[in-house]
Image (cartoon, rainbow, N blue to C red; front, side):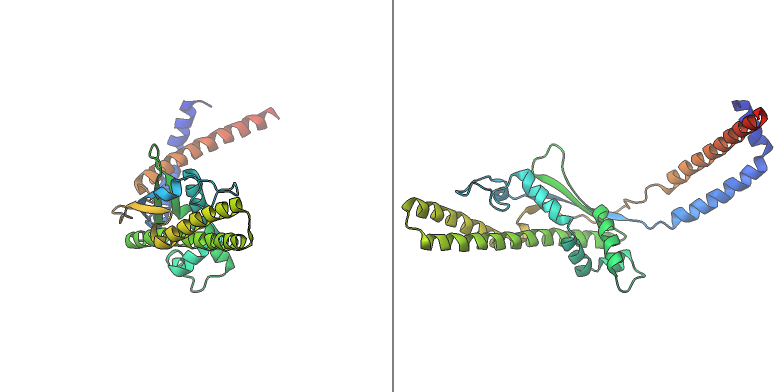
Length: 266
């Protein structure tokens, strides 16, 4: 089959194709108009200086967070951000279920699982290219103000949760070092434990003093998006769907012609 045969097919079936095309466009237009607008709020974060410093202690291991490298600190925050513990708590605390599932009064276990998968796509944390220690943090929802407020809260909760975890870990280390100091008689060990104690007290103090900016400082406040971020141009989507419709007809013509040839050969 050549291009002339395809054109002739369109001309012969123009009424049918036109009716199908109109019906297809009406259906697609209704579907596209029913897609809810989404708005993405974005903030810029910088890792605190004290979390970037690397130091080692007499145990030969890195302390929690404060001794981690820059990439380790960011990776730890990103990893915790994607845990069910953090996401489920965020869902309950900021009533995200009512926002994304307004028809559900009570969320069951499956709803939480679905929301967990959904929010992993709505909450985006990524480094800014060519800018060390700077990251973008965004949250996308169906409401401009809700996106902005929720993003602010998520950033605060992330810092607070990790600071509390650091305080708890540091306290256990302090208790252990104090116990060892009380039992040690070797002066070298006493000096080593004393240095470790000073380090852990310093870390505990830093985590306690700045829980709201423990890992990240906000260098760009979450914005209130003016334009929707999703969906994009509905007209463009409709245009692409029309192209797909035409190609589907051409594909149908080719398959029909191939089937006819194979049938004739038999």
